[in-house]
Image 1 (tube, rainbow, N blue to C red):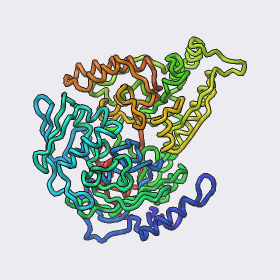
Image 2 (tube, rainbow, N blue to C red):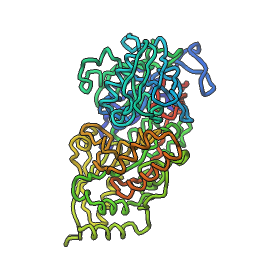
Image 3 (cartoon, rainbow, N blue to C red):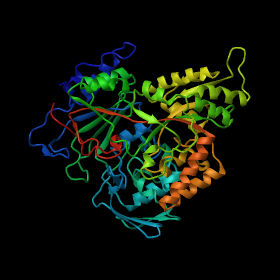
Image 4 (cartoon, rainbow, N blue to C red):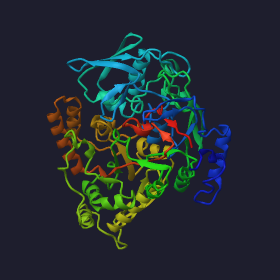
Length: 562
């Protein structure tokens, strides 16, 4: 088996352009850490593992993250790469089991009043922020009322919308007061969704421009050490962590390698330990799994329910025309996308809510069906009806298709969309920008025609889905919300009713009606439900221990001997 100490010795010698940059950066990082890439530890540094073995203390876990996160402010951006890093530093009030039921986090217990208007949290005793200051109910109040309700992309409009106050009768009690019942709220209190921040560092500051956005201070098992742009973020063990015996690792290094082939080579050479969310291209997974020291799993994405979409700017011609939007939805061959771009991982999407919610009745497949064998023929007919006949050169109109900057498969997906649009007379120019530029273009300036995207519908539609369809979330500067700028009074009313309905049968009926209306209006093309794969070295143990997977704290994670 390849030893991760080889990180400083070889592997990944060239990127796709033949430049020997990846190996050089590995060497630099290995030197910075003194070569401590998961090195062996004495037998005395052992404890019981959740996987049935003995935990080995120490070592550095190397995680591949793509693309590089635009910020480490998980309270301000729900970008996937942010979540993979920031959740090791910040914690939430609750954690979750694979049964999707809440478990104690920073809150050790909770009680919901019979009318659902009061939730009382009892906090863990002895928790401290990384700067040594105690974590108290005042930090909870500040985090919810002054940060998450105001600047979090989902918290402001959905998760904490009905929280009108947080009372603090004593330092270890936080009482949420709601103006109406919000049954979904208990599913939105993880470190990824609702990180708890230190009031003493943020109060009185411009939170959106705080220096702590990229030098985070939390209560989690790992402490921020360094961010070397374009290369890595380094976290170190929190020696004063409140959970006994955790963390097991000395460090976590998050590596940013733009070239997909180099990322696969890093895993294969043992120079990186783990990568998910398409950090390892699906095309390489079958080959890598043949290695005796590599495994792959789809476990750990249960609370995310991601869907690939094409987002229309419905305020810009020609996508203000529903027939044009429907035409493109008809033209997409969803099975082709699954088979040839995601190499068989995923299933066809039918609308705004993932089929993961079929288990509790929220999802319905009984919506307008765009996935038909003669989709291109139907698309051409609709475009003619919409008043966009073909010109002498065969084209109807031209657009720019922005590609979401989250990996090579999205480039391939963009190329496929370009070809499909060409078949129905739409000339598409592809544009691929870095994450901050793309986010600003799409969510602040609305300066786009059509963009690819993938979104997480999470553990409840209120938290994950509402943000893309409600008029209340059309907020310039808030990311991963309603970029299409589409909404209707009827769908807004349905979303408002679903958010507070406590009768499951009535709630399901509301969502079924909502799905029918939205799919008919086609403000997005719902392409496929992504099945992400985490590829890792078998040395990595106790890493995926919650349905949040790589968004977990990694406090229990450890590296077995080489």
